[in-house]
Amino acid sequence: MEPLQEPVVGVRLWPQVYAIARLDTVPEGLPSHTVGGPPVAVIVGHGEVSVLAPEDVIGDLALPGDEVFRGWRALTLEAVFPLGTVGVLATVSGALAEVGVPVMVFSSHDTDHFLVPAASLGRALAALNQASLGRFLRAPGR
Image 1 (cartoon, rainbow, N blue to C red):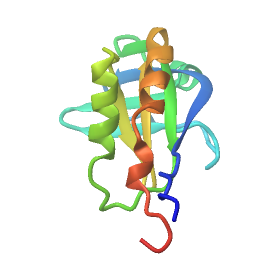
Image 2 (cartoon, one colour):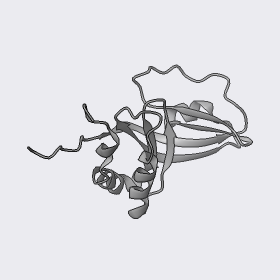
Image 3 (tube, rainbow, N blue to C red):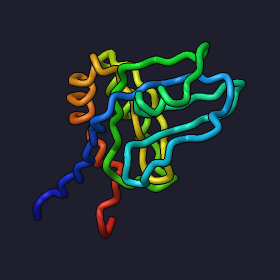
Image 4 (cartoon, helix red, strand yellow):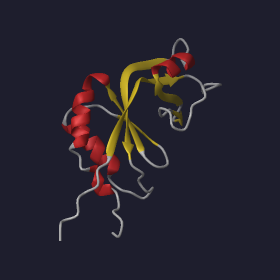
């Protein structure tokens, strides 16, 4: 009997360059997005409003005085992880930390998204390809 092969978790690189913004107020109108489009996150809490989105979206929302950090690339794990899955974020952030890549993380119901500096993209992709993320997926019958 052959040993079971670990499933592979793809890492999707979105073509857009991203920005991270710290806004003074909640934006009144976010541009419309499709479910299959690039991920966007608006986080309100702890006395701030953060928006993680393609640079063109941030450019439409940010006002003078808002902090905007440009030049990030977005990666999405191409897998659905059950909400009770433990260790995915720790594995990803650990793999990126080992190669000195900063990361900004945001999650949806089904999967996780990561922003890494564009200058560190090659190291980030290489580290994630070695991270054995497939162990977090349940194989049929297990």
